[in-house]
Image (cartoon, rainbow, N blue to C red; front, side, top):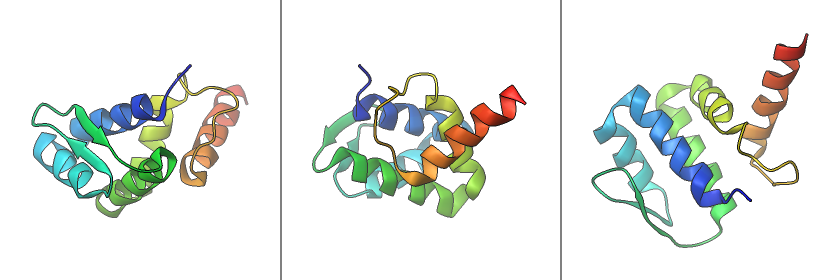
Length: 103
């Protein structure tokens, strides 16, 4: 079973590839309830993990635009459990990605 912690870690890893380690980790560390170490690993999640995930994606979108949410969605769609609740901003993109690949 996939955890929100795994999804959050994958989101940070993806944004690290795009924005660079320093920028991606600074953004992640600014999200309330999320603490990352210097190597880019989650040190602490304090609070509602679904909310932390949503806040994280929104913060990355401020820098990278809608493409950030799309890239994160693509990164996690293979590990997300079918009945797992996700922020709308990701769920919409996961659904549209699956539809786009089956047409």
